[in-house]
Amino acid sequence: MPNAPHACRIGARVARARPHPLLSALLAVLLLCPVACASGQRPEVFRAMRDALAELDDFGALLLEAGLPADTLPTGPELTPEEATRLRVSFGLYPSTSRTSGPRLVADVLLREVIAGGAPVMRSALDARLLRYQHLRVMGPDGFLSAALTGTPAQCVGPVEVRNGVLRAGEFEVGGFYSPDGNGGWVHVVFRPAGERSP
Image (cartoon, rainbow, N blue to C red; front, side, top):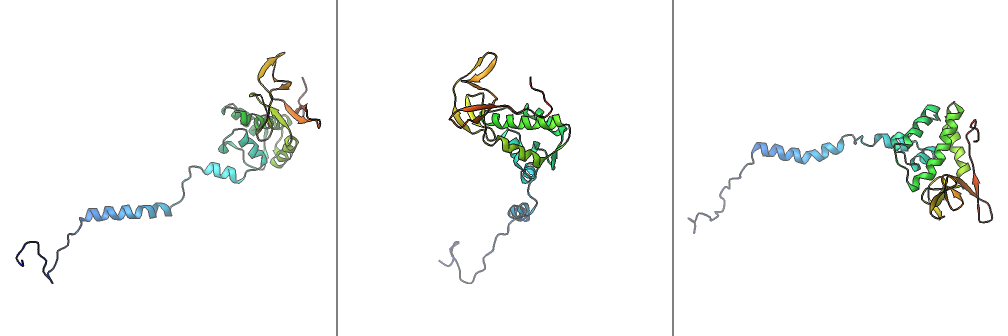
């Protein structure tokens, strides 16, 4: 058996196959790539959104609830009439849904107030103005009475129809603000920006 081609001899040297140098280099790159990639800076794909959300106030949260993307939110401590106009135009670029219609109506009233005032308004003042909508409901185009600030449905009123030239669900006007009357009913509330005349 000592002369058999596959027999092992004790003390014999075994030759090892060496990998090709190119293969070694490729293997090293593949193994080190995750370490190099992980140690670099994080991707900046959502930087605008992160920055906008980091400075989010109640007015900014309202604009998000109204359906605007985070990267369209205004920055800075005040809102100018020009920015208010830009935001109103932006609403046309993003479709309204049942959930966004209430917050969008509230935002629109606040933005019209800024535009009508003709001067910048502090964001903290806009945050304070939101309090007047805290307990109000909005009649949406879907026939639901929903929370004005969040769009959360509160009550299904019924089908929407045109009556006397006005879109209504039951006795509620679509797009109208309503406050509880204390007796289980609702009172229609009208907000007009300062300087805007009633029709």
